[in-house]
Image (cartoon, rainbow, N blue to C red):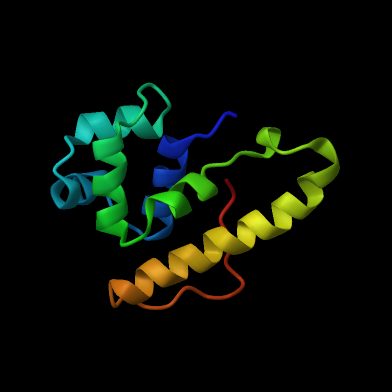
Length: 113
């Protein structure tokens, strides 16, 4: 399995319009480490995953679910994966925004992973 948690963190962070510096402050993770994670140059520790999930107010299993990539899915199920995964990402972003008391995400907005 080729889960890319760092890329998923970047997708969520940018969808929420959070700067790396802000996420760094919220998590206590140095900004340069976040950059390395998001760009696939470093793999997150369990502690890092926990800090990011706490900042986003999501569970660790949800972050792992979001990090599943298309190539991890059997070819015959990829069409379903694309639809379901995009919906889960959009729902997660809306859920995080609501928890942060931000403006809601437009339902037409989608985020490519």
